[in-house]
Image (cartoon, rainbow, N blue to C red):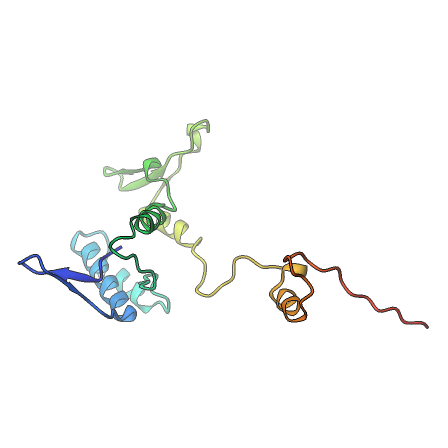
Length: 172
C-alpha cells in the first residue's frame, strides 16, 4: 500500500493524479527481481525464466482510494492487506542447510514438519492463486445470474425470495 503522491523537502504534499498500472507493475517487478539478484537469492537464469512467463505474478491495483479523513476505511484496508496467505510465525529458515520448514499447527505431530527448498515452498503457495478473471464461486438454480435478472425484469420477487418454478401442463 502506497500513497499516490509525494512530500517535498519543505513538507508540501504533491498528489499524483494518474498512475499507469501496467508501468507501475513492470517497475515493481524489476525492483523486486533486482533486489533478489543483488542478495544472491535468485540467479539471472531464473529471472529470465520468470520474465518469459505470460503472467508476471505481479499486480498493481489502484482503484481503491482512501481519503485522508477516512480513518475507518484506512483501518479496513490495512487489515485486509495485513492478512498473509501463510502464517509467518510457523515459517522457519535454516541458513546452514538453506531450507525452510513450515511447522505444523499446535496440537499436530511435530514429525509432520517437512524440510523444503525455498523456491519449492514459494511454488506451493503460488499454485493457490487463481488465474485472472476466473470465477471461484458459481451460483446455480434460483441464485444464478440469469434467473435473478429474469425475476427482476418480470417483477416476480419483491422481497428477493426465489420464486417457485412456473410449470405449464399439456395434455397428451
